[in-house]
Structures are given as C-alpha cells and as structure tokens.
Amino acid sequence: MKRGDEKLVVPKDCVLWCHRQPYAEAVLDDYAEVDLDKWNRQLEVLRIPARVYAVNADGRQIETGVGHIRRGDLDAASTTLDLGPDPALNRLYLCAAWLRAHPDRGGYRRFLDVRDPHDGHHPLDLIARALDACKAEPALVHTGAFRTWSGWPVAPGVGHSLMSLYCWAVHGTKPDRPQLLDKFSAASMIRYGWMEDGGASQFSVRTYARYSNLIHRWAGQAGTKPEIVELWLNRDWHRRLDRSVRHDDLALW
Image (cartoon, rainbow, N blue to C red; front, side):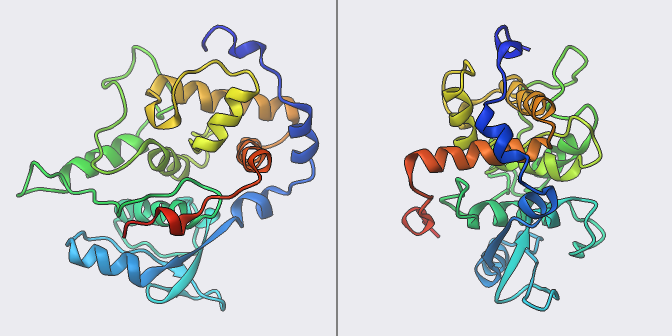
C-alpha cells in the first residue's frame, strides 16, 4: 500500500448511499441492452471463435436480436447463460458487450479485436495465455516478488477496464476480489484524496491493485460490498458533472 492510502476514510455520503443499496439489485441486476447481431456479425467477419449471448424479455438465452446482459451474468459461477465447454473467450466478449453498452461506463470506441497481428498462424494464442493469467492465482491485484510476470498480461485490444472486469468475473469467490477499474470511479477516488497521476488507462498493475484494495478498505469501513462502493464512486462522478456517457457520439463501429 502506498504511503497515504491507509489514511483515507470512506466519504460519509458514500456510507449513507451504500446502506440503501441491495447488492443483488444494484450490482448483479445492473444490466445493459446489447445488439447481439452487431457483435456476432463482426465476430464472424473477423473469424474470431466467440459468441455474445444475452437473455430476452422471457429470460430465454438468445444470440440474435437485442437482449439484456446483467452484470451477474458475467460471473463464472452464474448459470443464466451457457457459454459452452470452453467459455473463456465468450466470457471476455460478454464482459466487453456489457461494458460497451452500459450507459454509465466508459465503453469501447472500436470493436474488440483480440487477434495477434504478428502471428497469422496462431492469432489467438496470445489472448488465450492472457486469459489464463487473469484466472490463475495469485490474482491480478496481488503484487510482489512472487510473480513470474510483471505488468498487465499481453492481450491484444483488451484495455485495463475490460481486463479488470474479466478478473472480477472469474474470481467471484475471493474475499479480495479484483474490482472493476472504471475511469469515472478512479477520477472520483482522486477527488476524495487518493494520490495518483494519470487516468485509469495509464494505471500499472501495482496502481490498479492500490485502487482495488482501497475500494475493499472503504467497503469494510462502510459495512458494505466493494462493488457497491465502486458503483457509488461512478455515480458520484456522473452526478457532479450532471451528465452520462453518450455512446452514440463515441461509436466507431
């Protein structure tokens, strides 16, 4: 922990707000509306062996049309969606679709292309190794000399926010579960005294670990779940700016 992090106390407004939020509804049921045809058509064009699934109004799994993806569906322990016998790549694109379509998150301007541009024979080997690294122990938020690698796993096209969300999805049973690295939440955290330069896209793994660990500390102080604290940080940023993300203005695909 960097000097000064241990002195930060969870804001009182955060405590009051968090105590009124049921985890299942505020976090797990937080959904995004996704155009499945758009995602799956592009995956087919790029010959990426993945599919994005969602549920319709009847709760039935679909892969065409417009569907809803809950944040709880991203969790590897969820049984709502059948992602197949080898779900890693499907889960990554499920996380990407939720992140891209969610009105309060940063989203993606370009389509997520995970192929290695330098390996035409095995273009998916690099992303497969990255996803294995994300799932392995120690988790991404655990830094130290025990690591056999440094920095973020090399994953073509995958930004820090998406990688953190994927890590959240595959480490659901851990008490220090990696938290979603959201640029708006990080900006709010800095406003409340966290000392860090640069935006979330520039965070090192060590900085991300500090961010995630502070969210856990504040959750402990507030007597709530860390995901609720991160959600408050995100909403506090939007509330102060009195705006929401305009995805239509950002879309390039």
